Length: 289
Ligand SMILES: *Cc1c(COP(=O)(O)O)cnc(C)c1O
Image (cartoon, rainbow, N blue to C red; front, side):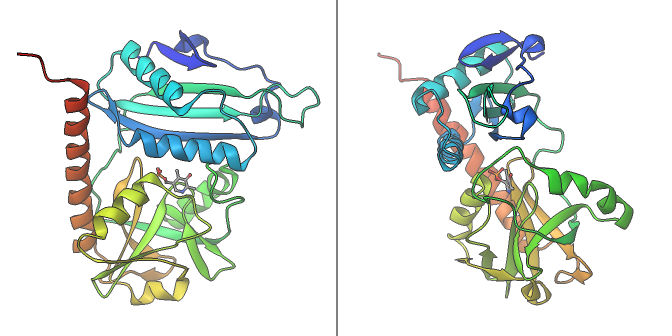
């Protein structure tokens, strides 16, 4: 049972967590958020997620009314009060109760806990992507606006695709609605778009891990490169590393999930385990003898 949420710095019963309808998030869709997992009671890569959350706020000229350290303490306090070992945490910063329904007011801050999503880091034989000509608005900001992705769900289902790939001007691959995209060229080069994407925290971990084994390139990626690729995959907080076997009509490589994605998936799991070990060492200072 998740009993508590945190609204504007106060623990409240989760069932009573609410905002007034005049909030700009409701009226104009003006809000940012972030989402991360915790395991064994420890948030994974918390500093990276907090950095991104504060960066998203800054780019929209919003102010988080807490220091990063103070915000981190509230997150840990919420996890402790709810008493679960693992789960997800959603942070939200909204435009506030605007007097004229347009101008931002004092922001509202929400910390909401959820159970660990059932699909977290599931291994997969590979998914098929429907391409869509689109570039997210202010791509570096994690806003709550998923209008394009959500409105395309019926078409995805009708055409038998699993997810989307946004392609700027029909030429430059960017990302999906909720995931970053990678190609593997020559079986040795791991390539991902370097700009005009949400800089995923999983993307950052995978770039770091891939750099130890392969050549890594962050640069513009043209849609025509899919035809030359051996493999493709998605990264995200929930998906971890997820193989992609088809982009539009183009089958990727031999149409099966490949060794590089599988290797990076294993490296990611090991990296998380090492991170958790370090966190629990820090949380339990050596007893004095
Ligand atoms: C959240 C998100 C991602 C993935 O980022 P992670 O930090 O790895 O979860 C990628 N693209 C968009 C548009 C996103 O909202």
